[in-house]
Image (cartoon, rainbow, N blue to C red; front, side, top):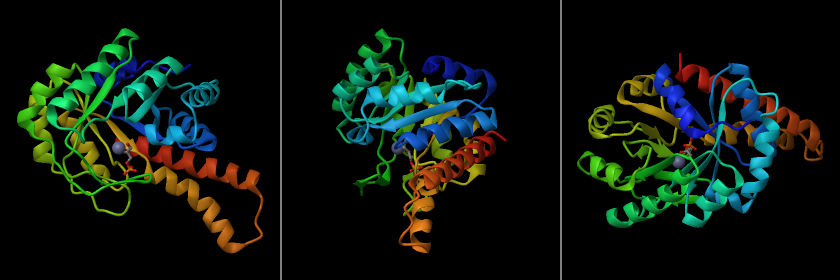
Length: 276
Ligand code: G3H
Ligand code: ZN
């Protein structure tokens, strides 16, 4: 059964645990993430970005996730990552997602607040927590590229959280999306933000961030870390390498099973190390 986001957050806070949120893109990755978390015996989220909803509908992903979690022994939530509109938020809550992000971080402060507030009103009615973002990350998220690096201003945090009613805050502290840039996480800035934020923090762009940095960030109320590219690379390299070796390779079933193994191993490794 897909676990409610508030319950996952409570578990993490009670156990001083960092919840990994792994991006899925398709059926194989969804099964692989569930398998990896179960192998590690640790809770987390399967998440799918708004952008990825061009490929799979919220109902499809809820169905696949429920199926993948049939034999799960660990609590796993289903999260909308980088929700780009109220319509997407609503569609995902209605489909059974148990945690939501509304990302209006590209908008001016007051408009960001307005968008988040609207999402919060809907989500909270259904008992679903909301993650919002203040500041913006540089880098590449699937096919969306952002050149601007806008760090989270600690002076705006309390006002933002109080006025929006969000439950989790995604921050920009030198973390980046994708594998092309090197993240330089500013831990003193994260510390400063954690002291003024009424809610726990989220780190996007987990791929490439040194594990010690994540482990250290736990002291600064980091509750959730997103991993996308690391898993996508594990998935895509299975097919790329096989094709490089043999241009007549057409064993999609065999390679899909192999990709599930690789992705699940990566997910199990990541969740275990950050919580070591
Ligand atoms: O929202 C998703 C994450 O921020 C993924 O970032 O691909 O750099 O791990 P990443
Ligand atoms: Zn992200």
